[in-house]
Length: 298
Image (cartoon, rainbow, N blue to C red; front, side, top):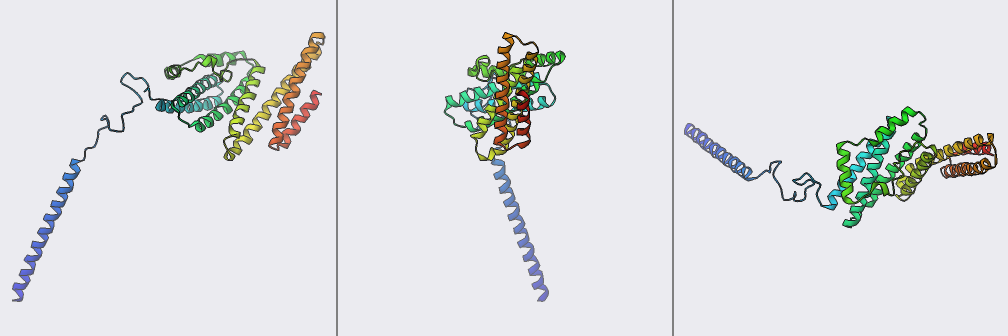
């Protein structure tokens, strides 16, 4: 009896195990069947979210203003990075070319946003502040270039345009931005005139400072740095005009006297503006330096 009960339990256990295995197989088969019903789109297949594309079948940018403004914003940011890299490599002609393209992209983006009633100008303004800041650096460094060989190298770099630059410029032209009459044309002007380069550097820093000042308290560190750079270039302008005064005094006549007065005024105003800038950030050492230069001028 005990033996027959044991055999009965073994048979029952085997039957239950087989039933469980059949259920598992059935469940697995059902899951696999369900998975096989899910359609995974291939990379080249369109989905319901891809109705708005960036490039059409003629390889032209889409007419969607919002998407085009995004592309232009990214292009402006990319050109800013190229300016930064070339400025470190002292390729100042390339810097000016990329500055021109970056600012044209910014202008085109801003125009598209106004047409599309899309108010995301805060990010645009922040990017513009970075572009104008590095523009101030570049124009200041170009003012220090005195070698004819270096000037020719930078001039050649300034006028070279690769295929990508030409395509981006086409998009800018389609939006209706004229680079020659743009409000930022003065930023990327190529000139070997020291006065014009220093003047452009000053105004680029001023432009960046005005933007950053309105971006909020979290930009205080950048505002401090920009104010210091502005003070430094004002000092350089003051020294430049002071040296011009000293040269003019050697050949003093009635005509030279008028010129000296104008140069003296420019030098004084530059030193005074630099002192005011350094006073805002409490930079004692630079305040003392500019007062010393102002004393030399007197």
